[in-house]
Length: 212
Image (cartoon, rainbow, N blue to C red):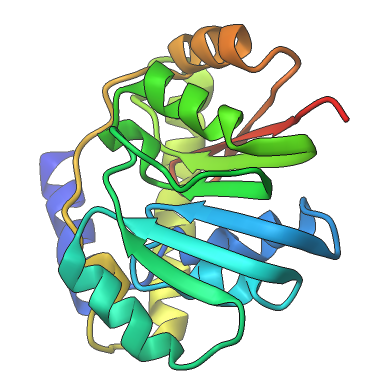
C-alpha cells in the first residue's frame, strides 16, 4: 500500500489539478441566483470570488497571505464590485451583513468553533453559509469513498494531461484534525439544522441558511 500511495503522489505531481475548484460549480448551484453582498473566506487567488461576481453586486475575498491577495487582484483586474483584503479569518473578518459567505478548504486551518461562529455572525437574515472542507477519515464510509476517489482522481488527472501546478495549489496546506462526526457535532451546535454532506475527492460540505 505505501508503494501504491507513493505512485499516486508521483502521478499527481505530474498531472496536478485543483480538487477544490472542481466543486465550484456545485457550490454555486447551492446559492441564490442573485444576491447583494458575498464574502469568500480564504479566497486564495480569487477563482471563486470571480465566479460569485456573476451573481452578486459586491464580493469581498479575504486571505491571510498578502502574496496570494496580490495575485488575486492581478488576475481579477478592474472588476466592478470585487475587492480583496488581507485578513486572518482566525481573528477578523470584514463587517457584514453578507447574503452569502463561502469558505473552501480553509476551516481546518482555523480554530473551528470561533471561525464558524464568526462567519455565521456575518450573515444577513436569510443568508447562506456554505463550507467545503476536509476531515480526518474515521469511518468505513470515509475509507470507502477514499478508495473510490483514487481511480477517479487518476482519471481526471490523465484527462487534463501534464500541466504546471495551478497557482491556487501552492498555498500552505495542513492535515485535517477533526473527524466527520466531530465536525457534525460541533457544527450542529453552532448552526442548528446545518446540512452536512460527504463528497468524493476527500471533501465534505456544510450548508446552513440563517433565519429570515
